[in-house]
Amino acid sequence: MEIIGNVEDLTTDVDPEYGEMNEYGTIYSVLKCPACEKTNVVSYDWWDGIESEDEVSYDFLYPRKPTYPIGLPENILSSYKAADKVKTIDVNAYAILMRRLLELVCLDRKAKSGTLAAMLKELADKNEIPSKLVDVAKGLKNFGNIGAHAASGTLTKEEIPIVNALSKAILEYVYSAPFLATTAENKLKKIKAKKSK
Image (cartoon, rainbow, N blue to C red; front, side, top):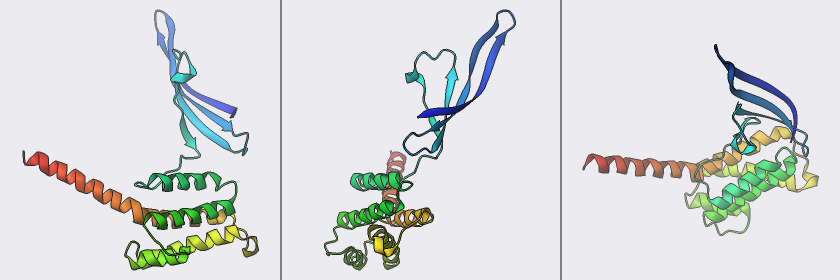
């Protein structure tokens, strides 16, 4: 990425006898992506003893690194990340990928029906997901259908937060909540085991 600006927040230690000794602090850089032409802001700690670029560790300040729901199976997390990468490039492609993600969730939860709508109903019937969440999933499916079919219209960046919130609601219910419950249960078992010794 092209560096289009730097701001240095540096401190110099001064020894009364020898003068300036060490310089250290934080450097903030604004970078421009050559592909999408968007800007990124990073910071890194710097001191005058740095000998190579390998010693620098960048913190991305903007845009914020995305956070993903915890407890996702690897293939679902991978699909979620892939969709996340295209959301600012093509909203319609993003919606299609999120719809595909929803289908992966259904397959992961062993739904056998043919269409996505049928798989969602099957999961609700098996109490894998509550029926109210099926309505959320149908909303995500419908956005994906609009993204896939040009005659249905065109999605805009205003729909990104809606599609994202719908998908997160489903993933957190199906994967994150059980993952947290299992983690807490295992932790409590360890605490009780230590206490009984």
